Length: 368
Image (tube, rainbow, N blue to C red):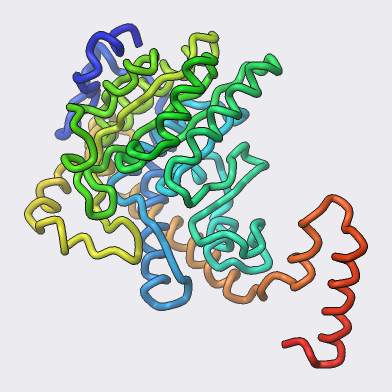
């Protein structure tokens, strides 16, 4: 990361769009890790496609895909340890899969049923997996950055040798919390890796209308931390940049801002029609930079991936998501009692009386 402050306008690329690798910068990951990275990127793509179909069918109410940005989640996830903390945005489903969160649990959150560990209280795609050290996603833009700064500051005070990974989109850098989060973390030298996924658009607002800076990475200089611009469609470059930033954080050298330059090959969410503001020719051109296509070419050249493997894995991923959907659609809504049971550690008398009244009313058929 020694060049980050001096050259925040340069972009780190290790794996070119044609699959050619820069051998001097290749991190030398073992074959098993490389294959797993490919599998999780494909699994993420398959899950996103299936969940978007569910939303169009009216079986869930909202979804937000990461199509074209899978390398951002998988590259960062592979560089972090499982006991590190993640304070995610809402475009990192691949990171949950990388950490072995069950597909069934991801699907249940989108249904908001009794299996949902949020018990239907969050919007769909607002996951929370405490057992995987992943903090609940927040809807307000940018709040995850100050939460991550707080987690990092707390871990530093407790002497924990862990790091925190958090994400924001290019549009989120215009939020007040972007300033507050980076400033607090930098002043405290908190072990946080801030990732800006610059996919070109904040819903329909292009990057050119978002900032006058040439890059988002260079914003790090004002906060006194390294900033590095990375090819976000290159899984190897994302891995190396994140690995180095994490090592720096663990050593007590403070936070880093990574700008992952990528492109959103889908709408902002299921509520968005990107064809209204992005031309068809732009999508066709950007598809040539698809991280899955790039990584496939690289792995095939190494002799550790082929078309038969991919088809078999895609089928396995489709079967898993379809089974998860089928199972979740048989699950009832959360129990009414859950509205009362999680408010306090010990339920106070007035709340208990309210619950008992509602239970009694339901027993008499008065409660809908």
